[in-house]
Length: 247
Image 1 (cartoon, rainbow, N blue to C red):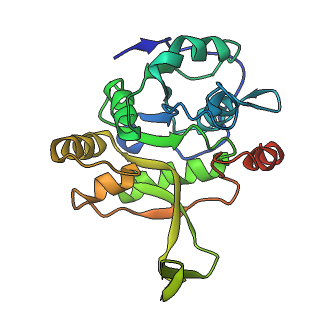
Image 2 (image 1 turned 135 degrees about the vertical axis):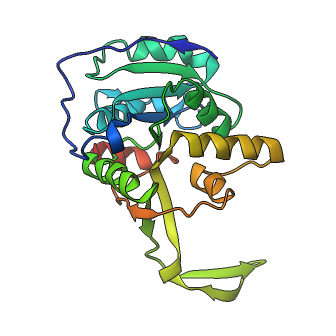
């Protein structure tokens, strides 16, 4: 595992989200996953380093999590080939909490596992997509607070559109909208639970789409908490002007 950087304290990004201290004083690590090389939005530049206003996409996400009072450190997972360049592009940022960069893996869950291996405590971890730069601080803070109370918390939004099932382009059934949610991040779990979920997935050869799905495989109930329509994930070129307005 490659790790760059140590804790850097600065004057910026004072805590704004008051989720309180972790249960029994346990630390909370914000783990920002940006381990992919998705370059279709910016030529050879991974989307997490595209510029929104005056800074990289991923820096916006990092700043939002540093501002959550309960968060005690932040770890950013980047593609191994972008670790040095990523450090250089973030060199002007002076977070007010300890911050490290870690090399990721081939799949998202491999990158989460790499970041989790750099966590030196058995407290809590809030996993967030580095391509969600407009995360409201209060949403992240509420998710952490809910996890400390309930045992875990996953941000989600109820589906707003009519949903149907289709085969070969023909509608074959309706999907009850009140039971469908769009899952977002952050997703907050005890460190030990997420480690167990990742280990079980690796053992069983399972590839998940998010951490909540891997935790559910353990039989652990997963709690949904309010996400935000502002918590948009950068996926398509047309998302960029929307995010410019949101950050």
